[in-house]
Structures are given as structure tokens and as C-alpha cells.
Image (cartoon, rainbow, N blue to C red; front, side, top):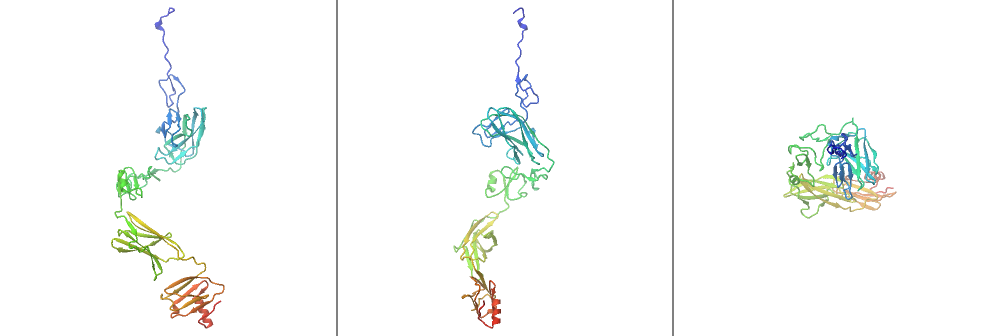
Length: 428
């Protein structure tokens, strides 16, 4: 071949394309020619909710969940603090359309995410550009998770050189942990009680003697009992139920004899509310129009009898309820006492007898209307005039009687009566 030895001719090795920058995330030691593919900074390789990630390109397809996004999985970059504020800087572009994006910082990866912070959003376009999103001071909050969200569907977003610029915090730092000194994992430095995603205390207890209230001991926490979570539920979840109450729950409360819940004592003038309950244990509480009353107790064999009296105003409607309970549970009955009279639009006449046996024939007449007392006291609603005619008809024991209405009273009338030397009089 033109006098040359073909065996001396060689074939050039093809270039190996790749990222030749040793400081890049995707540095290729075998690459002989840089192809511009170097990726720097934080990458969001964790996908959730239907998103798709490839290297440093991110897509939220149509049909993704509203909460879909991307998570950074490189724990070496944490923690982040923004005591005096900070920023996120990056280079970004799209595959043609525009896309709104933002970042979210969380205390920890799901589920213990709080406190958290969402950055403002920026709009990326097809042309690659540098962006900065400022982060205001987050005081003493520390973040160990950063997420990336693309708000526009079916647009491929490419990020590079994502850098989080934080700042130190010199003030007090919130420490989340177990604040119960009876727990085996008590943290004396904690100033915020820790809870898991189910609302359980992140406190570990060695036995039921250490717990703060009745509840369920788990290997990593404690859940208090409530109306939707009891000892049986605790056992089904593999926990240890702790119950301080061994009483039987009240199974029934009502009207044992069928004679109604209400009664009236003519001697005291009180309205009584009575309730029976089974079994014959527990305590009863009475509430009338938002006020609490103590209830008396009588032993009715298998049942308990509860009662309480109060002086009812016939012009007032009363809503009442009685709850009979033990530490294991209770029953409630309730009712209404309807008003029987219209409220007095005039003046209240109050009449009393100190001995309590009535006025013994004495009669008070005001403006032609007679009033008397049969027991210890009575009231009436009257309309006073500018000039009122008051007449007193004596009884057997007038010294026991007294009355008052407006500016008039038995004392003033008797004084005038004495001055006028009469037993029946006219006062104007």
C-alpha cells in the first residue's frame, strides 16, 4: 500500500462521553470527553404520588395525586437551619412549556413532618436560567427533609446546581421528645412533647404503674383511651392495655316506677328531679340550664335512686340532664320543664309568714284585689298605679305576717295606720 506496511497503521479509540468533573454528582471516571451532563447540588430522586424522576429531570404526569412530588434522599446534606433566613438557588428549565415549582422543608421525613415551611413558587421556562428563592427566618426550627414540587402537569422540569443556603440560629432551640419523667425515654432537654402520626405520646413506659392515664402501652409509645379506642382495640394492635378502673359501667338510667322524672313538694315549694339507675353504683350529676347541682342518693336494692330539688320560676323554661356514671362509663337522661306563666310585666308582691302556717285570716287588698298566704310564703304579679289603694284585713296572728311590693310594705302601711288611728285605711 504505497510502500507502507499496513501493519503499522492503527485505529483511534472512540471517546467515552460523560461527566468529567470530579466534583459533580454523576462524575464518570471512564469518560474521556465531557458531554455537558454533569449534575450538581441536591437531587430529588424520591418520587411519590405518581411523579417520575430521571437523573435531574422531573415530571408530574396528568392523573398524579394532588400531593405528588419529589424527595431528596441524600441525608448527608442535613440538617438545615434558617435562624437569620436563607435561600434556595438553582438553574432550571423546561422541555418547552412553563411550569410553576416550589420547595418544602420539613422537620423530618413523613410522618413526623412538623414544623414545616413552603417556599414561594417561581415559574420556569424553556430557556435555562438561574433562580433564587428567599427563605425568611425560621427561628430555631431544624429541617431534615426537603421536597420539590412541580405544579404544572405533563411538563418536564430540569434542575441543576440546587443549593440550600442556611444560617445559624443563636436563640433557644425547640427540642421534641418525651417530657414525662416516668417514661424510660424521658428527655430532660425536650420542651415540646413528641407525638406520632396517630396522636400517641412518643413516651415509652415500663409498666402500667408509670402511665399518665388509662391507655395502651406500645413498644415505642403510649395511646390514651377514648370513646373510639378502648382496651380491646389496644390488644388487637399488639399493645398492653392499662385500666385503673375496675368498676362496672352504668348500664341503664331512667324512670323505674313510670311516674315521671319530676315532682313537686308543696311544703318546700321545690321542684324535684328523680332518676333511677342500674347497677346500684356510681355517682350522679345534675345540670339545669348550665348550672350544676348535687344529687341525693337512696338505696333501692338493685337500682340506685337519685334526687335533687330546686325552686323553679314558673316563668322560666328549664333544660335539665342527669348523668349517672362510674369510671368505666355512664348513662344520661334529660328533659325539659316548660314555663307555666308569662314573665311578670308589673311588680312582684312578696308575702311571708314567719311561723309558716299562713296568714290565719289576714287579707291584703291592693287596688281592689285580695291576697293572702296559705303556707310560709307566696308571690303575685301586680300592676302598681300612681296612686294605690291598700287595705289590710287583720287576722289572728298579724305579727307573723309581712309583705312588700315596690315602695310599699306592711311596715309602712301599719305605720300610717297607727298614725291615722284606724284598722282599715286608704293610702295615696
